[in-house]
Length: 67
Image 1 (cartoon, rainbow, N blue to C red):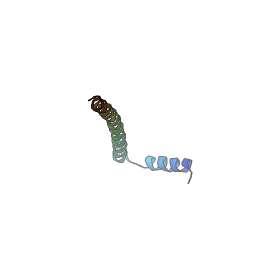
Image 2: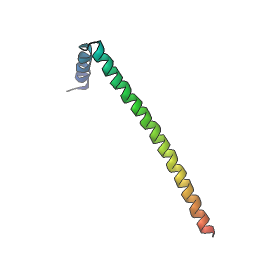
Image 3: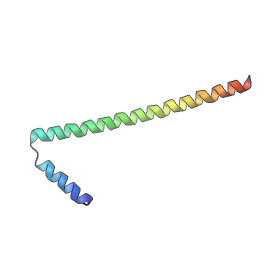
Image 4: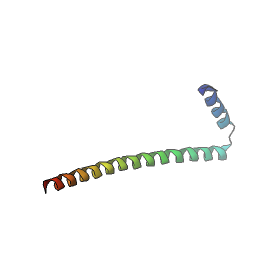
């Protein structure tokens, strides 16, 4: 199945929804987007934390070598 065909089927399915179902689908999609945003923030935080840990380990090693 081609991507265009998949998109058309999705659009047809969305057209068939009533108001309540449409709101549920929209809420589900919004929830997915928020989760993705939170995941990106977590990854950014983790990356910064790993940089700080590396920096601390390098400092610790250099202090040990000086003694």
